[in-house]
Length: 228
Ligand code: SF4
Image (cartoon, rainbow, N blue to C red):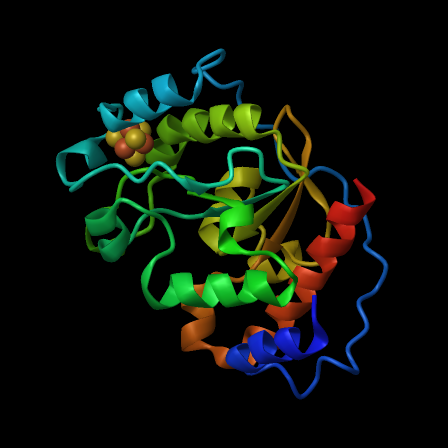
């Protein structure tokens, strides 16, 4: 990426003052965290069929409070798959993940490492909004995860970026804190897709002092993807 352009994106993140002196360490590779995800129950479906199944899904109680399902958006052949927790109010209204201020920050974070939003695929662990933006229950996540597994089977990403504690813990089936999950290479489920963890942009909007750590995570993820 053009250095001036990158500077502009980093400035939007409030990161331009320390980028030059930050040096990412060589990525350590962790042992797999927790048990592996169960095999998807939607094996063998194509995109239209999968989208239709999600749109009509009544597997958990969230179907009764959603405005619409939020399937995912982006390049179906992306190298990067960004996975968040669940739709919020605006996502529930628009039917697209990571819109609004958090979505704009995610776009800037991706731009800072040379990726346009359209180049990656963006999805959530849950396809329906939990009322009041409460944390998803374990059973809701378990019911919905097979849809994400099938999306992964179709996309075949080189790297998954789990944003936020809830997404990371559900994807890795662990209760380890986000702080301890960062800066390691995990692997997702049976597909063993390399997975890196970072902060949710909504959290970074509330806690801008952690943007530096998020930038370190993004550089780390870029290095991991380059090695795959
Ligand atoms: S959250 Fe997932 S499992 Fe629950 S109703 Fe929505 S699509 Fe179905």
